[in-house]
Length: 295
Image 1 (cartoon, helix red, strand yellow):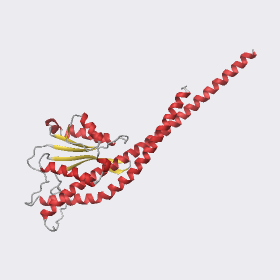
Image 2 (cartoon, rainbow, N blue to C red):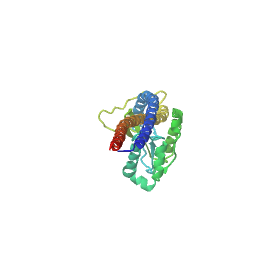
Image 3 (cartoon, rainbow, N blue to C red):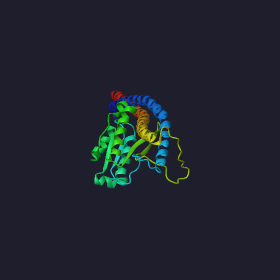
Image 4 (tube, helix red, strand yellow):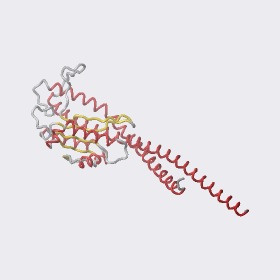
């Protein structure tokens, strides 16, 4: 039978841990509510803007208007991956899933670029930065402090940097790898092509390119709308990841609290059994001593 003091010490430790995980769950739930409201409000606008962007880009395909954000025929094959993780842990498989998918992209999709040194990374979040540094990957720059104040203006600066890198032909393809928020318990791992701008597949059933009326003119509208849409798409991805992180952390802390509660029940039962056995042994010793005195 386990020592009473050892069980009592462990029981106190688990109770303390449960208090911490319960508090972290409540903090994550409060942050999740705010982050969820932000992404739910932005998502319809961002999705519609992206739909218009794809339609415009498809319409430009058959005109003489130059679209600087379209796919280039002659390219050097350089790729930039924007890997979005969190700064902190204790959020289940949130970061592990992103890093596992990033390693898969390195090994399978972009193995040739990685071998040539043409695969670069822009980690957003400390967990991603630390993991990529251990893998000795080419890191362009990191943005670990972005979550301290996640606003559109701060995200806009990164989006403008990405657009400039594409326009100056530093990179021919930019992808974002992040967790898309579905609900508090579910996050969808997403690989999204940021640049070049997508077009509707030619001849695809159900794909309709809207014939827009442009005011003042098509060139002005496109030159203004494409950068705006790209800024919104990056902001949406980061808001998605931010909400998904808090959802994953709330779920993980809820499970940890439940596990601690079950462990406390088991330890309490062990403690009571050990205490009962100790009392029984003491009674037996007293009775045996009394019987010995009688003899």
